[in-house]
Length: 129
Image 1 (tube, rainbow, N blue to C red):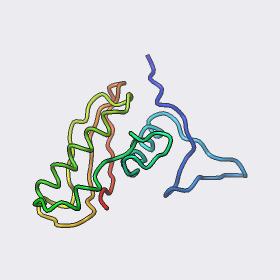
Image 2 (image 1 turned 90 degrees about the vertical axis):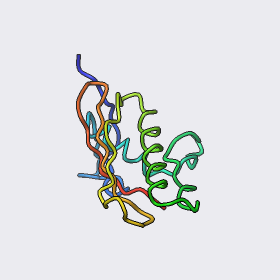
Image 3 (image 1 turned 180 degrees about the vertical axis):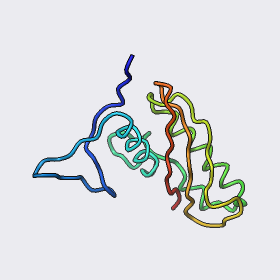
Image 4 (image 1 turned 90 degrees about the horizontal axis):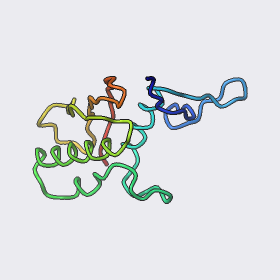
């Protein structure tokens, strides 16, 4: 059985890609990767058509918690957000690429997950405010 991960318009740094006057499309695992990355880069509740869409981390950076607690909250929200996509079977690992004690407002995070087709997928995103 082949699992379809859908089809969408290809984005390059947030811009639609046009080749020869036509919009380029993306499909399969590349579409899933693009869709999940967009979900993580969208602030939670900012989509007027789907207010439950996006990553809910804005308040994490305004609380007086230690960096370790903020990272745990970001990790939990990443798992929750990615887990809501029906094409994701499991979020296996969330790793902060910047090191454990990096006190910043934007962190580079690598997320390892399994798709419903059983294929592994790695996302590398910058999260923060």
